[in-house]
Length: 175
Image (cartoon, rainbow, N blue to C red):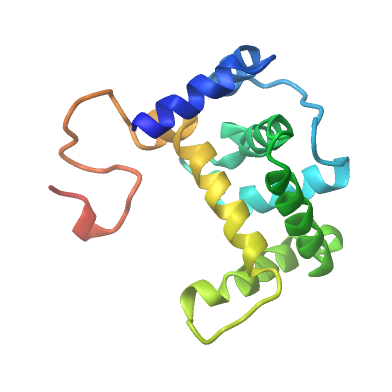
């Protein structure tokens, strides 16, 4: 948790960081103009993150504004050239799969195909690294946002949960 606090403190200290975090943490509905990603890359990132954490009875990546958070953090990482070049390579790999122009149904299949090395050690996919990067950052953005942490996980601060409502595996429902 200390790492999370220090990352948030660093982001808040950046020019515009406090303003961004305030709106991101509240997940207010407003239009967003990407700072790092080109419009087509940002749209693809947003769609990809929404396939990873879809909205259902709980908020998903869209409500948590995960793509916006990722764009802000990557843009703020200008002093870390590997961060930005890794994201450029990742989005190019996603584009090469046909994700950008695919139908919604095909996009889901493409994400599933990209994730195969995660499920099977002998499987390979040229965009697997992109899948892992997007998944890791989407999960971080979601589960540290108000919709992810408070509304989905029902986090109430330093308290003990007797059940875990966002997980529907029976073996994980009771402590």
